[in-house]
Length: 254
Image 1 (cartoon, rainbow, N blue to C red):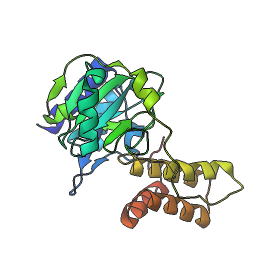
Image 2: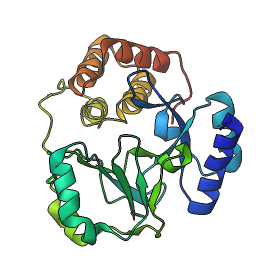
Image 3: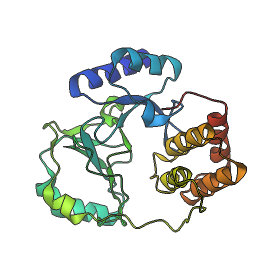
Image 4: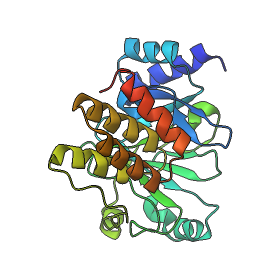
């Protein structure tokens, strides 16, 4: 599929489903990353803006900004984890019918309506659900695997978020990272924002926070705390350095 065809699919998805979309790509080790400077913060529903994203930052995958921006959140079931597979077998009748796609890992992405962005991003094992059952909601994103050739397992429209599932979820435990105490609460908030980022959104969260820190003329100690927060969520030194340098060069930020 050509980049122009992928872009057109993204435009169609935005126009027909109302999803805010942005380009993504895979790294050599199979991780999904945005090609745009601000990741899912650059997502758009506007056809002209979407075409501009793919023209300036082309990517072979289509990402969706989940939560209120697109009106949907996703349950990501990674069935290579046995607890996730057993949970799916036990609850499948309660989870479908709803729009469902096969993911690249062999798992499933179940789409549910979330117009108010009530559902948050969370990781299985810390959210009241088994390991391998993640949620992609407000402040997160999901890859639209159907555009990459993966099967649609259920063509039903996205259903309402199951009440029993929301009740089963708990607030994720806070990370062990404790940010630097600062007199500026706004800067502390940026550091906590990065420390709470989930896999798939980490670079985008760091870039956004670094841009805000640049705007506030943060000092070296503030950036060291931001880097420490980024390390605590698993980003490498090279990723952190490149992302912060990008922010300091003044690339567009939301």
